[in-house]
Image (cartoon, rainbow, N blue to C red; front, side, top):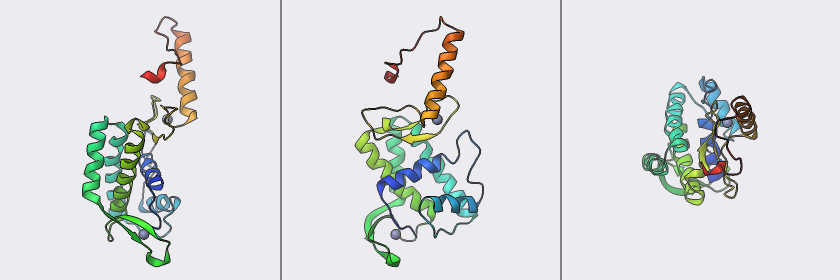
Length: 191
Ligand SMILES: [Zn+2]
Ligand SMILES: [Zn+2]
């Protein structure tokens, strides 16, 4: 099954999985689409069926609130996933692969594997950077999630595109209604 399980990689998988369905149309429309998603994330040998697809979507919806919820609730969800899916970590060099860490049970399904790895990845990230670095885009018409390890530079948007789009929209809104309370760009990170 999995070749490498590093925390960064598992966080990327969690973020990308949640972003397969936001306000944009569902991307995981078939087992083939899930197979492609896993292939794109370095799992060329994945074989998946409709059950895997349904299970993966269920895990996706359990991961989503980690990016939305208050820290206490986010931690509760991560702990719940760890309890359900993570096992005592162990090293493996199966199938001639280099030594790597497994955190899911040996016979785990792809959904269980992703749940265990991403819960552990997000737990480590939250412990290192705080849950404020695990967030959802602030643009009103975007629900994409992201993680931001750059503590000195808090981020509110998933991409520079959403940031500049929102800036333009709020500038236009101010032009249209100059009497509404103006937001000082220098202090907006307080919100
Ligand atoms: Zn492995
Ligand atoms: Zn966005």
